[in-house]
Image 1: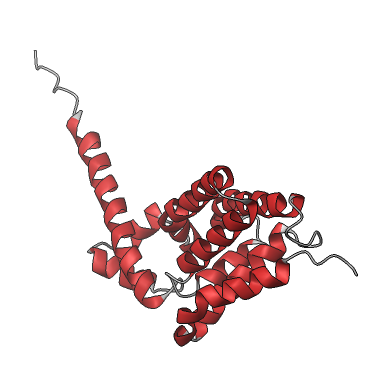
Image 2: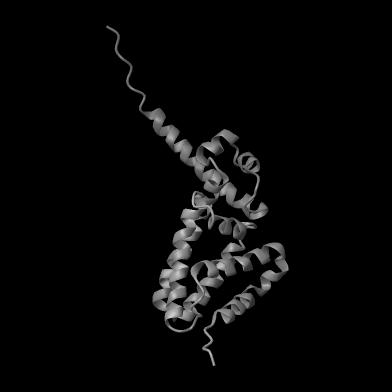
Length: 199
């Protein structure tokens, strides 16, 4: 009687490990390419530099937004955690100012990121929308704390704040020479947000 061959248990495990390596390699290369070319970077260029085919890239990331979400989620998570930390360690005004400065610096890391994040406000189906939401909510809490302390005008909401800081990111995208004035622009925004009691 012929013995049945032992089930091939190693192949799937090796395939999964290979798939994990491919994903990690795609994200590593994508970080470099997006830093060079912006959020509209060529997916074909990312695949070529990663040494994989387009089919492999699309198996891991069916859309550009999903690739960006995976690339940026750690950055957004860090900003969310930073907001929570500042909320407990700084005054409401200092917490909001420091977080906005940190956010504006991060937005400038990838050309086109400010525009991509603003687009997610209108598109709830975007992968980036979900990953931005917690970060925007964290910023809105800092804003409300400053408003409750009577430091920021009450007619400003989280979307206004997000739009203003993204505008600074967009400006530095268009004119990198302005990047050196980022902190000054943040202070101008904060000046405009300050509560001014009616005479």
